[in-house]
Image 1 (cartoon, rainbow, N blue to C red):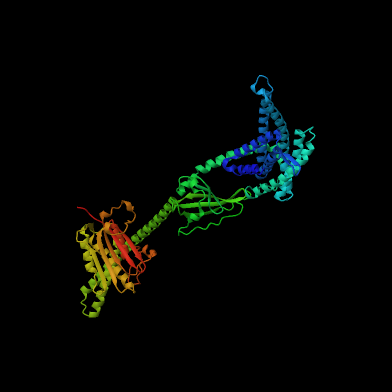
Image 2: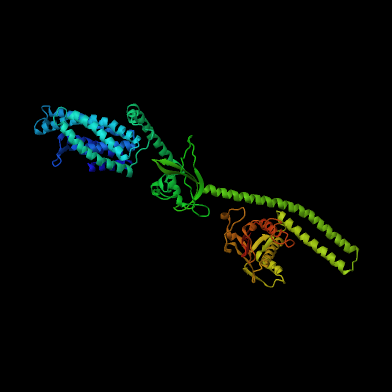
Length: 638
């Protein structure tokens, strides 16, 4: 009996994997076989107790009766009804085959209708049909009595073991009387059989109740429905079974629709346990995670693989409340963005929505995620382009303003110098002090004129005078003009090749660019008080040998061919710049030098001149480690 019951429990526990058919077929075959055993009259005699009982009604039928209770407790009324309907169908099929075989056994002319085998089979079938008639009537009553007794005891807050034991005992009493009334009517031994069977069956029910309780505590959980009354199963069977079937059919249809929608969704959909391990996933999730099939994700941890922008694990506070309010709207959906760490697609940026769901009284997580890697990249590029556009517009506005101011200021400078020359022509000034002051005025006016030319050079889009130049000779001449007598402690290193480097441009403007950068590099080394060895390096050569990645302004770097450009690098070991300062150094009137030592137009002029010569500037700098300015100019071919 224990072997039979445990075997049925194993099939019942695996029904979600192998399907319900195996359990129902095994139950039905056992039920039919029990009727043959009962018809054969197989009996066990216990001499020392003076008890004897039939194998069919005790060893085989009690596990069947227990399974009806188990199915009702774990699957509800519909599951129990489905089981009993299957049993009734098996009864009907057996009665049909038994009647057909009985007819053949008593029909003269058939080979089966003669001999001892035909008589034995005829007797067995006749007894079996009578046994099955009693079992059918008893089991139909059991279907309603077991749920009623069990639910009544559960509503009375009895312990699970006593509910199972009481339901089986009360049902067994009714079952035995009905079964014996049909199968042993007019049999003088029916009362003796009833007395013996009750004693043995009571012992067996105690043992089966223990097994059922263990199974429901360790393997299957009882359906909790505090509002269910004891007679609900009767009302459901007679008034709502067809409706239950219809609802079950609709449930299967909706499950199919749900599966179709989930599997074909373009977004990642996952079912996680409360630890963040993957229970189920769709094909989109497999694609985003970089695996061939969703089955490869099962059991893997997902939440532990999420990182923030700094590469630190993302802490997710898993909600524990009811995921929906009374109107069906989600109440505890958590939305966040994270990067996927691990797998074939590390670094994938995800937009995640996480919510809870309760399935069979177990808290689970529904995760929906969208791959926003490309969207994030486009957003960053858009932000960068917006910053560049704003910067260009700011430079253009300042350039236009500077050009207008420079023109007016240049007129004033010419007026000052003209009046100074007129003063010297009209008056012969012999006092040394007055001549010194006049020379000082002329010098200041010329310096102001130089500032004006810088402003005009920055604002002007064209070039003064384009000629073919040798960039190597131009750099050498600029370095010779730069080397000051008062800075002998400055270590200036030249790395210039001997071959010609032809370009096209304005000699004066380009020479001014080089001298400007050299002066800034010298000032940067002077500003680093901790330096004892001030170094300045000038390199000139092909751009392909400069050792940095080319990033031209406003042009796709993939469209630039390094072999078509020359690179001029001016590097110092001065005070350096932080990132914020590096972004503003080419703005007109922006300077980090003290008041009176810088106008803020030097690098703005450099930027404008290099850009007008179809080149660009790149800067590398770190605070305390110096700066490197890279100027790229296009070469010409003969």
